[in-house]
Amino acid sequence: MIAPPSEQHAEIMQFGTSRFLLAHVDYFVSESLAAGRSDKRVVIVQGSSRPEGRRKAHDLAERLQYPVHFRGRREGRTIDAEEWVDSLAACLVADSDWKEIERRFVEEITHVVSNTGEDGYAIPADVDPRHALPASFPARLAKLLHARYARNGRGVTLMPCELIQANGQRLREIVRDLADTRYADPAFVSWLDQECLWIDTLVDRIVSSTIEPVGAVAEPYGLWAIRKSPGLELPCHHPDVQVVSDLAPYEKRKLHVLNLSHSWLVQRWHDQGLASRLSYVREAMQESSLREPLESMLRDEVLPVLDRQLPGLHLEDYIETTLERFSNPFLDHRLEDIAQHHREKLRRRLAPVHEMARAQGHPTPLLESALRSTGIVGQAEAR
Figure 1 (cartoon, rainbow, N blue to C red):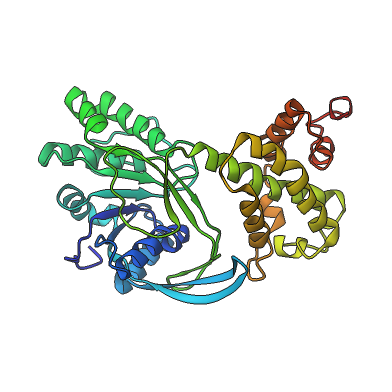
Figure 2 (figure 1 turned 90 degrees about the vertical axis):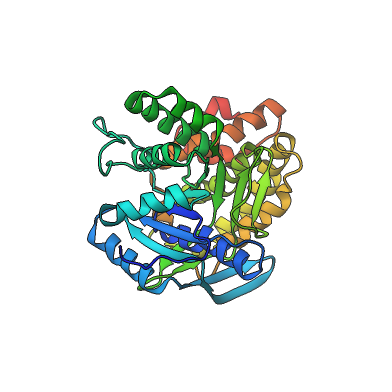
């Protein structure tokens, strides 16, 4: 073990040491602790055995505190401030600290959070949670849950943060399948369904860089939207942690405003031949030939269409917030990074709004121009 145990209510187990989690969930927990609104601390589990991962885990374990530098604008104010996160109880490495991880999971943990990347839910063909150290996150989680089921029978609340739709339910399905096929214990499968809470969440914050040896630089805006569920108790409380009855409208709002705007901006940037002169979103927002039509597209085309589909979500305010985030003078968000898998992003982000607009009889010439440029919408259809 690379960190001495803490006796301070180390009840949240976090899988992943990403800078996003450090500046988002761990920050919220720290703020909640400081305000006296909760008493749970975080035990981080470093899953990979890569040298850089182990170094980061060692640095986290050695310090248990780190800075987050919030830089940008929020609600009209420029923010350039460093805050210290003090919510960690320990940082453990899976391949060397598994016995301690299992002990804590069985005896102390009430909540699980994770952010294991795009491939975090992948299951190798030969994976088995009964192995001494399974090779994937879901299999490791199944192993820990089985140990808890067998030894104390208390359920746990799981709140994954991966950018996967219905992430809690998807994780439940994967773990349940592993339990069903590998343990062959119907009572364990029933326990997973009846005693554990699998909560869908949506996260939104740009964490742009790392502070060495431990820390992060992030934008001031943040959202952790959590689907309301019977029996849910939050691990922390913060104004940016919101419990909502349905995540789908929030997912659509993000996809069809913020993500749509990113991809529309990239298409316009490409069409105007600006790649050699502009590299970042913040630079694009200083270019009148990009910013002005972006604002018109959002206010005149996207807003009236989505307002009928997503009532009550304060879309005007969200559009203003999106433009403010894009104009962040401190954020180096590369347009070429957004341009990865561009055509597929246009299909998912822009095309549905275009289809909704057609059904409503609402013209969307600026949206259509981006879709026509890539052939997603033909000339005849656009007319």
